[in-house]
Length: 596
Image 1: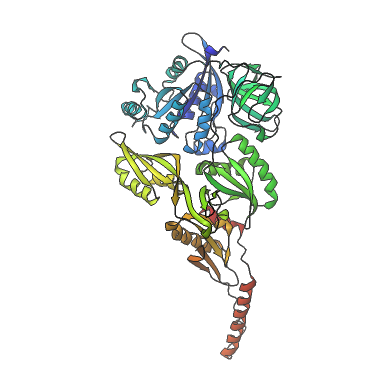
Image 2: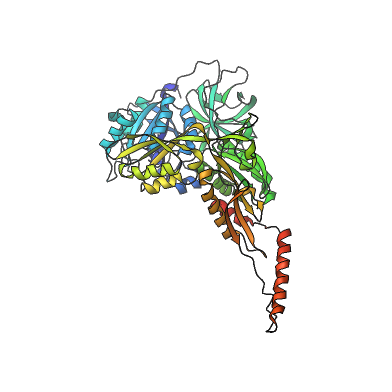
């Protein structure tokens, strides 16, 4: 189709504001999906996405729409995730579009993630069409949503389209607005083909399937194309688009999105954001998007050590589908061989682990998540440490710096005191507060990343009765008094439970870990000491009592010295056993403690 009749757009919003429901309605209204094939969350293909009601992967789909002016347009939609941990997916999708539909929940108003996604779209100079969704709800407040659009996002409120994706209200107006307001794609004017690879997945029969948006020239089967990042030249076997299942086409022209397959067998050969060009007459690199740096690290180990190679292959396939995920081999005394994996955040970590278990049938165990610390040594060298096992001895360290994040927390006015208390508990400082409207405020705070890893998001939701939301972006590094907390079982350090914590919080964390370990370590024939230590100093201790065999059972009455002799003999035996014995911590114990 000629470029003037093509519109490329994505849908952006805060999590749970109705992106996927709206994309379902658009697919149904344009006749892309027959009524009998319709289902809820149609573009969310993963079980995980349906269960949690969130979008994890960006999904491209091509629709044909006959507008009121009688012309037929090709609309290429990319449905994007809303959660902060997947903002990388969003930035990649926006790089392939000219416009974006911004959805705001009429009952919730503008939330933290809405602000972040709008900034991403504005950076790419996209045309933004605001949509106020869920107007059918009894407590919907459309005038307030329009006012927030103007006050918080500086977007004209009267340009917003009121709609209800669930009830099908306003869908025609949205489609007409896409045709009228979003600009048609223009060729870049390069000498030959230029296409941006914005996503990919692995197919057992076709190999690597790469999602592309063509910016210049055309892409068709039989062409020899070059992937500029990896320098590899491949022959295109098949091109096509999605509706939402893949279907084969003759060619992809300027402005169109779709996929191509070639003889690419290894996931490592395709780099997300790579430019695809003609191998005989290559053109320049498209402005892709920045290299992503993982912020949270965790070790992933197979429960059965024989599954190591199998896990390695599956992590490679997963990385192809999720380019923000990185991994490298590591080994642990307690857990054997495994991988050190990097993630964008805790939800990202949770989703990757769940996908490994479900999609690839892997039995895995993950260590406590940590962040990347910068350690300056006495010899002037600066090291980046993401694993407590590699932290040097304290006498070789001049200072340890930890990564900070700028957090934007939006909450109702009445919870501002509780919110401030939570931020100070997490070692954060509130820079400034901003009143958004009569009901809500936005707190801008500087926090250490390792403090928001585990329960911060849940605590915000529970404090604000579900009305609070947060978004964060990475700030600088700051010097902090961080120490390595070791857990000793029977005098031996267990590296799987080691972590780097702030000195103030070390004792609390040590006590909690020791108490949990006491619950899960089985009783031995002798007393086992569980200790939390910083360097040589013990800061917490729990004791697992010994199993006791009743050695005096065979003595009926008689002299007490006979019983005493048997008990002394047992005591000597236990002392000897303790000197030589080692405590085998069962796998279930590791899993229980790491879950806690």
